[in-house]
Amino acid sequence: MIYIKLFFVFFKIGLFSIGGGLATIPFLQELIDTYGWITSQELLDIIAISESTPGPIGINAATYVGYKTSGIMGGIIATLGIVAPSIIIISLIASYFRKVNEKPIVQNGFYTLRPAVIGLIGAAGFEVFKIALFNIDLFAQTHNFLNLFNIKAIILFGVILVLMKKVKLHPIVYIGLAAAVGIIFKY
Amino acid sequence: MKQLWELFRIFAQIGCLTFGGGYAMLPMIQEEIVNKRGWATDEEILDYYAIGQSTPGIIAVNTATFIGYKKKGVLGAIVATLGMIFPSIVIITIIAIFFDHFEQYQIVQNAFAGIRVAVAALILNAIISMWQNAIKDYLGIIIFLLSFSVVAFLDISPIWVVIISFLVGVIIKGKKVDSK
Image (cartoon, rainbow over all chains, first blue to last red; front, top):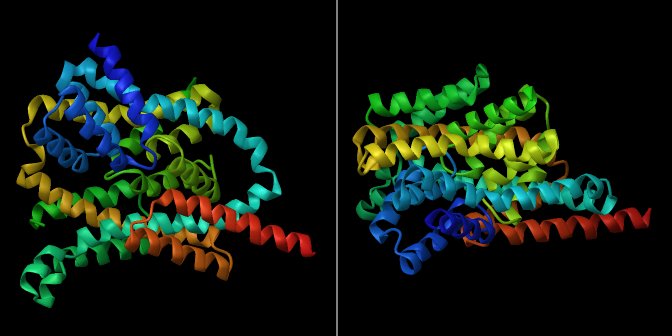
């Protein structure tokens, strides 16, 4: 039964990929070798599509592979499979967390953990920042310092920062605005 | 029932607006969960992220599950997660059915070049507002800088950062309490 197999293969991926969507990719690689459900060209497509659609990459990849193997139902089942371990494990941790969280030793740990998590978010943001505002590849080819900066993107970045400071709008407004600017001014 | 539906709806909305993985979701979570509804504080969201980062599964999903559980128990955890994955299932299925090489369309590429700029600005903004609540002394600033540098430049796994920074707090802050 392909559905059951899909569910458990993706359950396993959810269980073993610790730390974010890109961590699932080595496991997706296995799908090619072990099951032949997708080709390596399809895997590249899946990653590219996942990165250019909303939603976490791991989830998008699960839906796509599931659909490719056995249609709409396959997409749903693979996706449920990849999130099932999260629901089980996080529910267990969360139920325990309430009691543990009050303890001074845990409070002390979280006191220094929080700045570290902001650092992690900063590092993830830095990756986006590099790709969005700079042309690192172009600079490497031409060695022209001016080529390093994506001027159009930097102007948009500045405008959004000013808007965020002056008028506090919902994040979706900035995303919609930026998408429109990207299309109109051919970013 | 009404609260469950609200959980589903909010996470579906967040899932719809998350471009590029777990950390890009942070500004949305902050807006919807912390600022608008007060269901969790900035500090709690950071704690959930730390746990989501170091446990199996996708960070965005783990964080959604955690907030759902806090609000409505196991059922809340399930509903929040289903909300989170609902937009992906719909959007990816439609793309898989109707488009070949969706990512190669010029209009998609242009829109995404723009969206990435907005995501960078949103993450920066989220970091600034979180900073005020979570970084309270020089120790915090040093830990932030170390954590940022080792992950951004040395490619060290974030899990190590989570474990080590937690232990630093247990040891250093624990000693201070003893000496009083």
